[in-house]
Image (cartoon, rainbow, N blue to C red; front, side):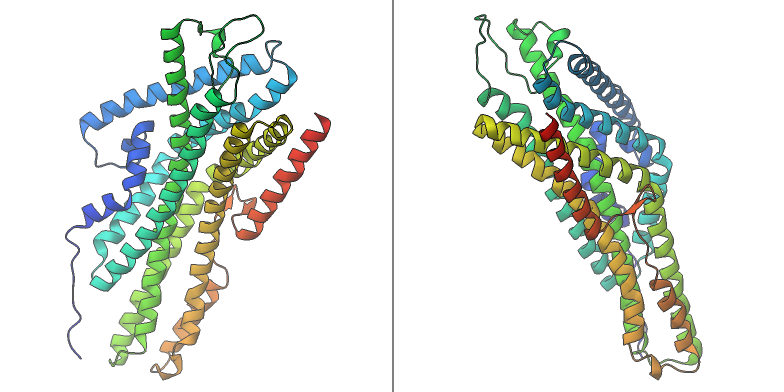
Length: 404
């Protein structure tokens, strides 16, 4: 048998950066990237502090002004109901932002494990497996970014201009705004002030969209990497029976497989530990926001406002897809972890020498209880619970419409 090819990954730093490319751009805007990625320059850290302060300022201003408008006599009941969605969205985004900050050490630990795996890869086919799974993570991240930004940009720009009347009954020009309440602090009748306020709202929307998409992209990339490591374990298991080695060599190969499997399980457990609070906020917050969007959809349907109907529908699809991504990656991780047991059983283990086959029983047993990503350890993210969330949001929105 020929000597095994050793393929050192000299470009592992580039591989890590390419794997986290979407997270890097999104988290830079939020000022969090230097917190979770240690290899950053001094200039990046200074810019991160500025971005962090700016993001928290605009989010806090948005929350205060919309809260005052929504919960006081400045708005009628119909406006209050429509503003509960944006108000809840900024509140939950700030919660996710907060947990991204306080859990930055956990995110950094996961990234360090990811970087170590890229550095430790020694065979070219294993690197190709990791690249394929990383590409799947990129694809899901792109879909999440496109859906969220298309829905959000439509709500912030298209709907205010095309679904509102330009003048009111007092013959005063009405400046279209996506979020009501900013006239408390700004005189929107002055054109320069209105342009500044509108741009401020758009920037606030970008910050909120970045928070939502960055959480989704981090979770997607971590799970994609874990699936890549599981696929490497599967490749090692399949190749085990093809080796014509001595008993000692088989034992060494089996030790490598078990060690790699255990390391992958620990990384999967770290993902669940890091994301469980954020996933709970995402699940609860998105479910409630979907209820308010459905209420607005029904209201605008009665008003026959086609632009508003299209905008709310696309926004609703964006949030549904966001929840679907979380449930999909949770289902994918469970499925991949279960494959280790199935693959270990399906190979020709009876041709292995001595008691080597008995070592596979441990992997089969562990695979019967695959790692799950949970929302606060209360509910697992899976296709079944995705259906439950969608159904519950519909019933709650119907209840709101009935009482309204």
